[in-house]
Length: 477
Ligand code: NDP
Image (cartoon, rainbow, N blue to C red; front, top):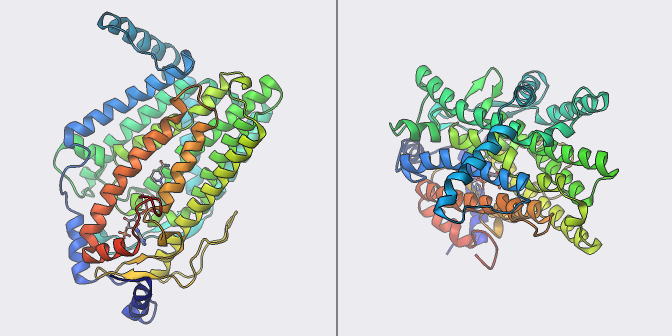
Protein backbone atom coordinates (compact mmCIF):
# COMPACT_ATOMS: atom_id res chain seq x y z
CA UNK A 1 0.00 0.00 0.00
CA UNK A 2 1.28 3.46 -0.85
CA UNK A 3 1.73 5.67 2.17
CA UNK A 4 1.73 9.47 2.23
CA UNK A 5 5.50 9.28 2.72
CA UNK A 6 6.07 7.37 -0.47
CA UNK A 7 3.64 9.65 -2.30
CA UNK A 8 5.71 12.58 -1.10
CA UNK A 9 8.78 10.82 -2.46
CA UNK A 10 7.23 10.71 -5.91
CA UNK A 11 6.99 14.50 -5.70
CA UNK A 12 10.77 14.65 -5.99
CA UNK A 13 10.71 12.34 -8.98
CA UNK A 14 7.96 14.45 -10.55
CA UNK A 15 10.00 17.62 -10.41
CA UNK A 16 12.56 16.04 -12.66
CA UNK A 17 9.98 15.52 -15.46
CA UNK A 18 10.76 18.98 -16.76
CA UNK A 19 13.71 20.40 -14.91
CA UNK A 20 13.38 23.98 -16.18
CA UNK A 21 9.79 24.78 -15.27
CA UNK A 22 8.58 21.73 -13.36
CA UNK A 23 5.70 21.80 -15.86
CA UNK A 24 3.27 18.97 -16.43
CA UNK A 25 4.39 16.66 -19.22
CA UNK A 26 1.76 14.32 -20.63
CA UNK A 27 3.28 10.96 -21.52
CA UNK A 28 2.55 9.22 -24.85
CA UNK A 29 0.42 6.68 -23.01
CA UNK A 30 -1.38 9.60 -21.34
CA UNK A 31 -2.04 11.15 -24.74
CA UNK A 32 -3.51 7.90 -25.97
CA UNK A 33 -5.83 7.78 -22.97
CA UNK A 34 -6.83 11.43 -23.47
CA UNK A 35 -7.61 10.66 -27.12
CA UNK A 36 -9.81 7.75 -26.07
CA UNK A 37 -11.61 9.88 -23.47
CA UNK A 38 -12.32 12.43 -26.20
CA UNK A 39 -14.31 9.86 -28.21
CA UNK A 40 -17.95 9.13 -27.56
CA UNK A 41 -18.15 6.09 -25.28
CA UNK A 42 -21.24 4.72 -23.61
CA UNK A 43 -24.42 6.75 -23.39
CA UNK A 44 -24.87 8.59 -20.11
CA UNK A 45 -28.06 9.88 -18.44
CA UNK A 46 -30.07 6.98 -19.84
CA UNK A 47 -29.18 7.72 -23.47
CA UNK A 48 -31.43 9.63 -25.90
CA UNK A 49 -34.66 8.77 -24.05
CA UNK A 50 -33.17 9.65 -20.70
CA UNK A 51 -31.97 13.05 -21.86
CA UNK A 52 -35.28 13.77 -23.59
CA UNK A 53 -37.04 13.04 -20.31
CA UNK A 54 -34.67 15.43 -18.51
CA UNK A 55 -35.11 18.13 -21.15
CA UNK A 56 -38.89 18.07 -20.84
CA UNK A 57 -39.22 16.98 -17.22
CA UNK A 58 -37.11 19.70 -15.66
CA UNK A 59 -38.96 22.71 -17.02
CA UNK A 60 -42.23 21.00 -16.00
CA UNK A 61 -40.90 20.34 -12.49
CA UNK A 62 -39.73 23.94 -12.13
CA UNK A 63 -43.17 25.23 -13.08
CA UNK A 64 -44.83 22.83 -10.67
CA UNK A 65 -42.64 23.84 -7.72
CA UNK A 66 -43.07 27.53 -8.47
CA UNK A 67 -46.88 27.16 -8.68
CA UNK A 68 -46.97 25.29 -5.35
CA UNK A 69 -44.85 27.94 -3.70
CA UNK A 70 -46.48 30.97 -5.29
CA UNK A 71 -50.15 30.01 -5.13
CA UNK A 72 -50.52 27.13 -2.64
CA UNK A 73 -48.46 28.20 0.36
CA UNK A 74 -45.64 25.81 -0.52
CA UNK A 75 -47.82 22.69 -0.31
CA UNK A 76 -47.20 19.98 -2.92
CA UNK A 77 -50.65 20.01 -4.49
CA UNK A 78 -51.82 17.09 -6.59
CA UNK A 79 -55.02 15.58 -8.02
CA UNK A 80 -56.69 13.06 -5.73
CA UNK A 81 -58.32 10.98 -8.41
CA UNK A 82 -58.08 10.33 -12.13
CA UNK A 83 -61.09 12.59 -12.75
CA UNK A 84 -59.24 15.47 -11.14
CA UNK A 85 -56.17 15.17 -13.40
CA UNK A 86 -57.57 17.17 -16.30
CA UNK A 87 -58.90 20.12 -14.25
CA UNK A 88 -55.70 20.06 -12.21
CA UNK A 89 -53.53 20.34 -15.33
CA UNK A 90 -55.82 23.05 -16.70
CA UNK A 91 -55.40 24.97 -13.45
CA UNK A 92 -51.60 24.63 -13.63
CA UNK A 93 -51.61 25.79 -17.24
CA UNK A 94 -53.78 28.79 -16.34
CA UNK A 95 -51.25 29.83 -13.67
CA UNK A 96 -48.41 29.60 -16.19
CA UNK A 97 -50.29 31.56 -18.86
CA UNK A 98 -51.24 34.34 -16.48
CA UNK A 99 -48.27 34.68 -14.13
CA UNK A 100 -45.36 33.09 -15.99
CA UNK A 101 -45.90 34.20 -19.56
CA UNK A 102 -42.78 35.58 -21.25
CA UNK A 103 -43.86 39.20 -20.91
CA UNK A 104 -42.12 42.01 -22.77
CA UNK A 105 -41.04 43.39 -19.42
CA UNK A 106 -39.37 40.07 -18.49
CA UNK A 107 -37.59 39.98 -21.85
CA UNK A 108 -36.24 43.46 -21.19
CA UNK A 109 -35.06 42.65 -17.65
CA UNK A 110 -33.64 39.18 -18.31
CA UNK A 111 -32.30 39.97 -21.79
CA UNK A 112 -30.97 43.32 -20.60
CA UNK A 113 -29.01 41.63 -17.84
CA UNK A 114 -27.59 39.00 -20.22
CA UNK A 115 -26.47 41.67 -22.70
CA UNK A 116 -25.09 43.86 -19.91
CA UNK A 117 -23.10 40.93 -18.47
CA UNK A 118 -21.75 40.05 -21.91
CA UNK A 119 -20.68 43.64 -22.59
CA UNK A 120 -19.04 43.89 -19.18
CA UNK A 121 -17.17 40.63 -19.81
CA UNK A 122 -15.91 42.03 -23.10
CA UNK A 123 -14.69 45.39 -21.86
CA UNK A 124 -13.70 45.08 -18.21
CA UNK A 125 -10.04 44.51 -17.38
CA UNK A 126 -9.22 41.14 -15.88
CA UNK A 127 -6.63 38.72 -14.66
CA UNK A 128 -5.29 36.62 -17.54
CA UNK A 129 -5.27 32.95 -16.68
CA UNK A 130 -3.90 30.15 -18.79
CA UNK A 131 -6.22 27.13 -18.88
CA UNK A 132 -5.17 23.49 -18.75
CA UNK A 133 -3.69 21.96 -21.92
CA UNK A 134 -6.64 20.86 -24.07
CA UNK A 135 -6.01 17.42 -25.60
CA UNK A 136 -8.42 18.04 -28.51
CA UNK A 137 -6.45 21.20 -29.41
CA UNK A 138 -3.13 19.36 -29.45
CA UNK A 139 -2.49 20.33 -25.79
CA UNK A 140 -2.72 24.01 -26.60
CA UNK A 141 -3.72 26.15 -23.62
CA UNK A 142 -6.40 28.86 -23.85
CA UNK A 143 -6.22 32.21 -22.10
CA UNK A 144 -9.17 33.21 -19.92
CA UNK A 145 -9.83 36.86 -19.13
CA UNK A 146 -10.99 36.59 -15.50
CA UNK A 147 -12.89 39.83 -14.96
CA UNK A 148 -15.96 38.46 -13.16
CA UNK A 149 -15.07 40.28 -9.96
CA UNK A 150 -14.95 43.73 -11.58
CA UNK A 151 -18.12 42.87 -13.48
CA UNK A 152 -19.80 41.92 -10.21
CA UNK A 153 -18.88 45.22 -8.57
CA UNK A 154 -19.96 47.13 -11.69
CA UNK A 155 -23.29 45.28 -11.61
CA UNK A 156 -23.79 46.02 -7.92
CA UNK A 157 -23.11 49.74 -8.43
CA UNK A 158 -25.40 49.85 -11.49
CA UNK A 159 -28.18 48.06 -9.61
CA UNK A 160 -27.88 50.49 -6.68
CA UNK A 161 -28.14 53.47 -9.04
CA UNK A 162 -31.10 51.97 -10.91
CA UNK A 163 -32.92 51.21 -7.65
CA UNK A 164 -32.28 54.47 -5.84
CA UNK A 165 -33.15 56.60 -8.87
CA UNK A 166 -36.32 54.58 -9.39
CA UNK A 167 -35.36 53.68 -12.96
CA UNK A 168 -35.64 50.03 -12.07
CA UNK A 169 -36.80 48.97 -8.63
CA UNK A 170 -35.03 45.79 -7.54
CA UNK A 171 -38.25 44.57 -5.90
CA UNK A 172 -39.52 43.99 -9.45
CA UNK A 173 -37.26 40.95 -9.79
CA UNK A 174 -39.00 38.85 -7.17
CA UNK A 175 -42.43 40.20 -8.20
CA UNK A 176 -41.82 38.98 -11.78
CA UNK A 177 -40.32 35.63 -10.80
CA UNK A 178 -42.62 33.51 -13.01
CA UNK A 179 -42.23 35.69 -16.11
CA UNK A 180 -38.45 35.89 -15.73
CA UNK A 181 -38.24 32.13 -15.20
CA UNK A 182 -40.01 31.47 -18.50
CA UNK A 183 -37.71 33.84 -20.38
CA UNK A 184 -34.72 32.12 -18.71
CA UNK A 185 -36.08 28.77 -19.91
CA UNK A 186 -36.43 30.06 -23.45
CA UNK A 187 -32.77 31.09 -23.36
CA UNK A 188 -31.79 27.79 -21.73
CA UNK A 189 -33.60 25.71 -24.33
CA UNK A 190 -32.79 27.64 -27.51
CA UNK A 191 -29.07 28.33 -26.94
CA UNK A 192 -28.07 24.61 -26.84
CA UNK A 193 -29.66 24.10 -30.27
CA UNK A 194 -27.88 27.18 -31.60
CA UNK A 195 -24.56 26.03 -30.13
CA UNK A 196 -25.03 22.58 -31.65
CA UNK A 197 -25.71 23.92 -35.16
CA UNK A 198 -22.85 26.41 -34.87
CA UNK A 199 -20.41 23.64 -33.89
CA UNK A 200 -21.51 21.40 -36.74
CA UNK A 201 -21.37 24.26 -39.26
CA UNK A 202 -17.86 25.24 -38.18
CA UNK A 203 -16.56 21.68 -37.75
CA UNK A 204 -15.75 22.29 -34.07
CA UNK A 205 -17.90 19.45 -32.76
CA UNK A 206 -16.27 16.69 -30.73
CA UNK A 207 -17.10 13.49 -28.82
CA UNK A 208 -20.32 13.13 -30.83
CA UNK A 209 -22.65 10.16 -30.47
CA UNK A 210 -24.49 10.73 -33.75
CA UNK A 211 -27.85 10.95 -31.98
CA UNK A 212 -29.18 14.49 -32.48
CA UNK A 213 -31.04 14.96 -29.23
CA UNK A 214 -28.32 13.34 -27.13
CA UNK A 215 -25.66 15.54 -28.73
CA UNK A 216 -27.72 18.69 -28.15
CA UNK A 217 -28.02 17.65 -24.51
CA UNK A 218 -24.34 16.82 -23.98
CA UNK A 219 -23.19 19.60 -26.31
CA UNK A 220 -21.05 19.55 -29.40
CA UNK A 221 -18.53 22.31 -28.82
CA UNK A 222 -15.96 22.33 -26.01
CA UNK A 223 -14.65 25.90 -26.05
CA UNK A 224 -17.26 28.33 -27.47
CA UNK A 225 -15.82 31.83 -27.65
CA UNK A 226 -16.84 35.32 -28.77
CA UNK A 227 -13.62 37.30 -29.04
CA UNK A 228 -11.95 37.16 -25.63
CA UNK A 229 -15.05 35.80 -23.88
CA UNK A 230 -15.25 32.10 -23.18
CA UNK A 231 -19.02 31.65 -23.33
CA UNK A 232 -19.08 28.48 -21.27
CA UNK A 233 -17.23 30.06 -18.37
CA UNK A 234 -19.11 33.33 -18.77
CA UNK A 235 -22.47 31.57 -18.65
CA UNK A 236 -21.47 29.46 -15.66
CA UNK A 237 -20.48 32.43 -13.53
CA UNK A 238 -22.10 35.61 -14.82
CA UNK A 239 -25.66 34.48 -15.49
CA UNK A 240 -26.90 32.13 -12.74
CA UNK A 241 -25.18 33.46 -9.63
CA UNK A 242 -25.85 37.10 -10.54
CA UNK A 243 -29.57 36.32 -10.78
CA UNK A 244 -29.57 34.21 -7.62
CA UNK A 245 -27.89 37.04 -5.69
CA UNK A 246 -30.17 39.77 -7.04
CA UNK A 247 -33.24 37.65 -6.30
CA UNK A 248 -32.10 37.65 -2.66
CA UNK A 249 -31.41 41.38 -2.75
CA UNK A 250 -34.80 41.87 -4.33
CA UNK A 251 -36.42 39.88 -1.50
CA UNK A 252 -34.51 42.02 1.01
CA UNK A 253 -35.64 45.28 -0.64
CA UNK A 254 -39.23 44.06 -0.66
CA UNK A 255 -39.08 43.23 3.05
CA UNK A 256 -37.56 46.61 3.78
CA UNK A 257 -40.32 48.38 1.86
CA UNK A 258 -43.11 46.36 3.47
CA UNK A 259 -41.80 45.81 7.00
CA UNK A 260 -39.25 48.56 7.45
CA UNK A 261 -36.51 46.04 8.20
CA UNK A 262 -34.83 42.94 6.72
CA UNK A 263 -35.23 39.66 8.62
CA UNK A 264 -32.06 37.76 9.67
CA UNK A 265 -33.27 34.90 7.45
CA UNK A 266 -33.33 37.13 4.38
CA UNK A 267 -29.99 38.68 5.38
CA UNK A 268 -28.65 35.11 5.61
CA UNK A 269 -29.72 34.45 2.01
CA UNK A 270 -28.23 37.72 0.79
CA UNK A 271 -24.94 36.83 2.48
CA UNK A 272 -25.00 33.20 1.30
CA UNK A 273 -25.73 34.07 -2.32
CA UNK A 274 -23.22 36.92 -2.31
CA UNK A 275 -20.53 34.58 -0.94
CA UNK A 276 -21.21 32.18 -3.80
CA UNK A 277 -21.25 34.89 -6.45
CA UNK A 278 -18.14 36.52 -5.03
CA UNK A 279 -16.34 33.16 -4.81
CA UNK A 280 -17.00 32.55 -8.49
CA UNK A 281 -15.45 35.96 -9.21
CA UNK A 282 -12.54 35.96 -6.83
CA UNK A 283 -11.58 32.40 -7.70
CA UNK A 284 -12.47 32.70 -11.37
CA UNK A 285 -8.91 31.87 -12.38
CA UNK A 286 -9.47 28.43 -10.77
CA UNK A 287 -12.51 27.67 -12.93
CA UNK A 288 -10.54 26.80 -16.12
CA UNK A 289 -9.05 23.96 -14.03
CA UNK A 290 -12.47 22.47 -13.29
CA UNK A 291 -14.05 19.52 -15.02
CA UNK A 292 -16.86 21.64 -16.47
CA UNK A 293 -14.32 23.72 -18.37
CA UNK A 294 -11.88 21.20 -19.71
CA UNK A 295 -14.19 18.24 -20.21
CA UNK A 296 -17.90 19.07 -20.40
CA UNK A 297 -19.14 20.45 -23.68
CA UNK A 298 -21.52 23.40 -23.98
CA UNK A 299 -24.86 21.64 -24.28
CA UNK A 300 -28.34 21.67 -22.76
CA UNK A 301 -27.11 20.01 -19.56
CA UNK A 302 -24.87 22.97 -18.74
CA UNK A 303 -26.69 25.77 -20.55
CA UNK A 304 -30.23 25.15 -19.28
CA UNK A 305 -28.89 24.88 -15.78
CA UNK A 306 -26.98 28.15 -16.10
CA UNK A 307 -29.76 30.18 -17.69
CA UNK A 308 -32.81 28.76 -15.90
CA UNK A 309 -32.18 25.88 -13.48
CA UNK A 310 -29.83 27.53 -11.01
CA UNK A 311 -31.36 31.03 -11.09
CA UNK A 312 -34.94 29.88 -10.60
CA UNK A 313 -34.75 26.75 -8.43
CA UNK A 314 -31.96 27.35 -5.93
CA UNK A 315 -33.53 30.32 -4.22
CA UNK A 316 -37.01 29.13 -3.24
CA UNK A 317 -36.51 30.18 0.37
CA UNK A 318 -36.36 33.81 -0.78
CA UNK A 319 -39.57 33.36 -2.78
CA UNK A 320 -41.21 31.82 0.30
CA UNK A 321 -40.08 34.67 2.56
CA UNK A 322 -41.22 37.31 0.12
CA UNK A 323 -44.78 35.93 0.37
CA UNK A 324 -44.96 35.14 4.08
CA UNK A 325 -45.04 36.97 7.36
CA UNK A 326 -41.72 36.76 9.28
CA UNK A 327 -43.53 35.04 12.17
CA UNK A 328 -43.86 31.99 9.85
CA UNK A 329 -40.10 31.42 9.81
CA UNK A 330 -38.62 33.26 12.80
CA UNK A 331 -35.87 31.44 14.77
CA UNK A 332 -34.41 31.95 18.23
CA UNK A 333 -31.01 33.67 18.53
CA UNK A 334 -29.04 30.42 19.16
CA UNK A 335 -30.52 28.92 15.98
CA UNK A 336 -29.47 31.99 14.00
CA UNK A 337 -25.95 31.72 15.46
CA UNK A 338 -25.87 28.05 14.49
CA UNK A 339 -27.09 28.73 10.94
CA UNK A 340 -24.65 31.56 10.26
CA UNK A 341 -21.81 29.57 11.89
CA UNK A 342 -22.54 26.50 9.76
CA UNK A 343 -22.76 28.54 6.57
CA UNK A 344 -19.47 30.32 7.18
CA UNK A 345 -17.61 27.14 8.21
CA UNK A 346 -18.86 25.23 5.15
CA UNK A 347 -17.99 28.19 2.97
CA UNK A 348 -14.44 28.28 4.36
CA UNK A 349 -13.88 24.57 3.63
CA UNK A 350 -15.42 24.84 0.16
CA UNK A 351 -13.44 27.91 -0.82
CA UNK A 352 -10.08 26.65 0.45
CA UNK A 353 -10.55 23.09 -0.87
CA UNK A 354 -11.25 24.34 -4.39
CA UNK A 355 -8.39 26.80 -4.14
CA UNK A 356 -5.95 24.15 -2.86
CA UNK A 357 -6.60 21.82 -5.78
CA UNK A 358 -6.65 24.51 -8.44
CA UNK A 359 -3.48 26.17 -7.21
CA UNK A 360 -1.79 22.80 -6.98
CA UNK A 361 -2.76 22.17 -10.60
CA UNK A 362 -1.46 25.59 -11.57
CA UNK A 363 1.82 24.83 -9.85
CA UNK A 364 2.15 21.70 -11.94
CA UNK A 365 1.83 24.00 -14.97
CA UNK A 366 4.65 26.16 -13.65
CA UNK A 367 2.37 28.95 -12.34
CA UNK A 368 3.58 29.93 -8.87
CA UNK A 369 2.18 33.40 -8.29
CA UNK A 370 -1.50 33.52 -7.58
CA UNK A 371 -4.10 36.20 -7.86
CA UNK A 372 -5.02 37.93 -4.61
CA UNK A 373 -8.61 39.10 -4.42
CA UNK A 374 -10.97 39.70 -1.51
CA UNK A 375 -11.36 37.76 0.72
CA UNK A 376 -8.16 35.68 0.66
CA UNK A 377 -8.67 32.94 3.22
CA UNK A 378 -5.78 31.33 5.08
CA UNK A 379 -5.10 27.78 3.89
CA UNK A 380 -5.97 28.32 0.23
CA UNK A 381 -2.58 27.05 -0.91
CA UNK A 382 -0.95 23.88 0.41
CA UNK A 383 2.70 24.39 1.20
CA UNK A 384 4.93 21.48 0.17
CA UNK A 385 2.02 19.40 -1.09
CA UNK A 386 2.19 15.64 -1.22
CA UNK A 387 0.80 14.00 -4.33
CA UNK A 388 0.72 10.91 -6.43
CA UNK A 389 2.57 11.16 -9.70
CA UNK A 390 0.54 9.23 -12.26
CA UNK A 391 1.94 7.49 -15.30
CA UNK A 392 -0.37 9.74 -17.34
CA UNK A 393 1.69 12.75 -16.29
CA UNK A 394 -0.92 14.47 -14.08
CA UNK A 395 -0.56 14.61 -10.32
CA UNK A 396 -3.15 13.87 -7.66
CA UNK A 397 -3.02 16.01 -4.55
CA UNK A 398 -3.03 14.10 -1.26
CA UNK A 399 -2.68 16.89 1.26
CA UNK A 400 -4.72 19.80 2.64
CA UNK A 401 -8.45 18.96 2.71
CA UNK A 402 -7.69 16.45 -0.07
CA UNK A 403 -5.88 14.19 2.42
CA UNK A 404 -9.20 13.41 4.15
CA UNK A 405 -11.71 13.04 1.36
CA UNK A 406 -11.76 12.68 -2.40
CA UNK A 407 -14.52 15.31 -2.63
CA UNK A 408 -14.18 17.71 0.32
CA UNK A 409 -15.45 20.53 -1.95
CA UNK A 410 -18.68 18.67 -2.74
CA UNK A 411 -19.42 17.96 0.93
CA UNK A 412 -18.99 21.61 1.95
CA UNK A 413 -20.96 22.83 -1.06
CA UNK A 414 -23.83 20.50 -0.20
CA UNK A 415 -23.93 21.70 3.42
CA UNK A 416 -24.31 25.26 2.14
CA UNK A 417 -27.12 24.19 -0.18
CA UNK A 418 -28.93 22.55 2.75
CA UNK A 419 -28.62 25.76 4.76
CA UNK A 420 -30.18 27.72 1.88
CA UNK A 421 -33.36 25.68 2.41
CA UNK A 422 -33.19 25.22 6.20
CA UNK A 423 -33.18 28.98 6.75
CA UNK A 424 -36.99 29.05 6.51
CA UNK A 425 -37.51 26.04 8.77
CA UNK A 426 -39.85 23.21 7.86
CA UNK A 427 -43.07 24.93 6.75
CA UNK A 428 -42.61 23.69 3.18
CA UNK A 429 -40.25 21.16 1.58
CA UNK A 430 -39.81 23.22 -1.61
CA UNK A 431 -36.78 25.30 -0.54
CA UNK A 432 -35.01 21.99 0.12
CA UNK A 433 -35.28 21.18 -3.56
CA UNK A 434 -31.80 22.63 -4.22
CA UNK A 435 -30.06 20.40 -1.68
CA UNK A 436 -32.05 17.31 -2.69
CA UNK A 437 -31.41 17.87 -6.34
CA UNK A 438 -27.81 18.85 -5.70
CA UNK A 439 -27.01 15.66 -3.79
CA UNK A 440 -28.35 13.64 -6.72
CA UNK A 441 -26.23 15.69 -9.12
CA UNK A 442 -23.12 15.37 -6.97
CA UNK A 443 -23.46 11.61 -6.45
CA UNK A 444 -24.03 11.12 -10.17
CA UNK A 445 -21.16 13.48 -10.98
CA UNK A 446 -18.85 11.63 -8.60
CA UNK A 447 -19.71 8.35 -10.35
CA UNK A 448 -18.95 9.84 -13.78
CA UNK A 449 -15.86 11.61 -12.53
CA UNK A 450 -14.35 8.61 -10.72
CA UNK A 451 -15.08 6.40 -13.72
CA UNK A 452 -13.27 8.87 -15.95
CA UNK A 453 -10.34 9.17 -13.52
CA UNK A 454 -10.12 5.40 -13.22
CA UNK A 455 -9.95 5.08 -17.02
CA UNK A 456 -7.44 7.91 -17.17
CA UNK A 457 -5.12 6.91 -14.34
CA UNK A 458 -5.66 3.12 -14.04
CA UNK A 459 -3.52 1.67 -11.23
CA UNK A 460 -2.47 5.13 -10.06
CA UNK A 461 -6.13 5.94 -9.36
CA UNK A 462 -6.42 2.75 -7.29
CA UNK A 463 -3.31 3.80 -5.40
CA UNK A 464 -4.82 7.26 -4.83
CA UNK A 465 -8.07 5.69 -3.51
CA UNK A 466 -6.00 3.65 -1.06
CA UNK A 467 -4.22 6.75 0.22
CA UNK A 468 -7.39 8.87 0.35
CA UNK A 469 -9.88 6.26 1.46
CA UNK A 470 -13.09 8.22 1.84
CA UNK A 471 -15.19 9.57 -1.00
CA UNK A 472 -17.03 12.21 1.00
CA UNK A 473 -16.97 12.26 4.79
CA UNK A 474 -13.78 11.03 6.48
CA UNK A 475 -14.44 7.96 8.62
CA UNK A 476 -18.02 7.60 7.35
CA UNK A 477 -18.19 7.18 3.58
P1 NDP B 1 -13.68 18.75 -8.75
O1 NDP B 1 -13.21 20.14 -8.41
O2 NDP B 1 -13.66 17.77 -7.65
O3 NDP B 1 -12.83 18.23 -10.01
C1 NDP B 1 -12.72 16.88 -10.37
C2 NDP B 1 -11.50 16.69 -11.24
O4 NDP B 1 -10.34 17.16 -10.53
C3 NDP B 1 -11.21 15.23 -11.53
O5 NDP B 1 -11.86 14.84 -12.70
C4 NDP B 1 -9.71 15.21 -11.71
O6 NDP B 1 -9.43 15.68 -13.04
C5 NDP B 1 -9.24 16.26 -10.75
N1 NDP B 1 -8.92 15.72 -9.44
C6 NDP B 1 -9.68 14.96 -8.61
N2 NDP B 1 -9.06 14.74 -7.46
C7 NDP B 1 -7.85 15.35 -7.55
C8 NDP B 1 -6.74 15.48 -6.69
N3 NDP B 1 -6.73 14.93 -5.49
N4 NDP B 1 -5.68 16.18 -7.12
C9 NDP B 1 -5.65 16.78 -8.34
N5 NDP B 1 -6.67 16.69 -9.21
C10 NDP B 1 -7.76 15.98 -8.82
O7 NDP B 1 -15.14 18.81 -9.24
P2 NDP B 1 -15.96 19.77 -10.17
O8 NDP B 1 -15.09 20.37 -11.21
O9 NDP B 1 -17.12 18.93 -10.55
O10 NDP B 1 -16.51 20.91 -9.17
C11 NDP B 1 -15.85 22.14 -8.84
C12 NDP B 1 -16.70 22.88 -7.81
O11 NDP B 1 -17.92 23.32 -8.41
C13 NDP B 1 -17.09 22.03 -6.61
O12 NDP B 1 -16.90 22.75 -5.43
C14 NDP B 1 -18.56 21.76 -6.80
O13 NDP B 1 -19.22 21.62 -5.57
C15 NDP B 1 -19.00 23.00 -7.56
N6 NDP B 1 -20.21 22.74 -8.35
C16 NDP B 1 -21.33 23.43 -8.01
C17 NDP B 1 -22.51 23.22 -8.69
C18 NDP B 1 -23.73 23.95 -8.29
O14 NDP B 1 -24.74 23.85 -9.00
N7 NDP B 1 -23.74 24.66 -7.17
C19 NDP B 1 -22.57 22.26 -9.82
C20 NDP B 1 -21.34 21.58 -10.08
C21 NDP B 1 -20.20 21.82 -9.37
P3 NDP B 1 -8.02 15.51 -13.81
O15 NDP B 1 -7.18 14.58 -13.02
O16 NDP B 1 -8.39 15.03 -15.15
O17 NDP B 1 -7.42 16.89 -13.82
